[in-house]
Image (spheres, one colour):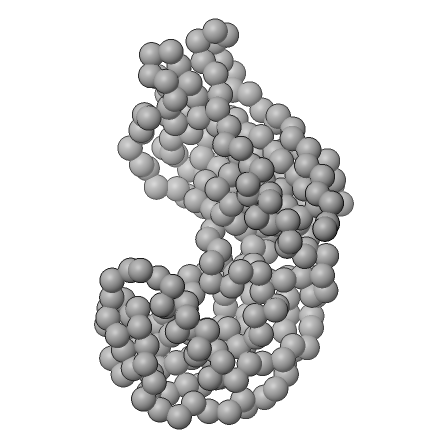
Length: 285
């Protein structure tokens, strides 16, 4: 069993802390670290972490949750293709349309959301952009055309080239990140939030947990004698701002996660436009 080393570093404390009145509560990241302990970040090629919703949906007349087959699926037009991955360029095999369709059906059946059934009336081999934890990647895919209009798209690579295909979600707390390949630091875009009763944004409280497989960034809720535990310190009001945190070693090929285990998208460089967050209503719990 792979030995996992975790180091916890308290990165930042907000300046408005009142001793004896306000404390901080962090979610325990150990369960997230354990769930990712078998992630083979050093494998070549590195497993893809897709955070795009799957199957990808092209315009259709409603939410399709079941798909049947009303046509013969084509054979592979090609068995291999060169794919530009976030960490390398590799020649990878394709899966037949029938295998991709079976995986797509299993994915739809795993969702309990209400919707409608549609029938696949055609399939074609395409190249599709998917969002991964290292930015967008163009992959061979199968496009399954629906009788009711639109299409469902599924990657045409074997599942061994992915990690938990179809079950990963992007972080809504850490909007994006950039990481140096040589310096032990990450820059994350997060909403700064506000202290309870304050109008000026404050630097988010963050705790970094590192293992050989992943880096987990945990935010804090604040506890006060008058309201107990509250999330008002991290309520979103304004644009996401960038904050740089030190690591014990460069991020490398490790995954970057938030405290819920959702995936943070890491880009090279810091030239991308800063994303904006919605303005939710402040909450107390």
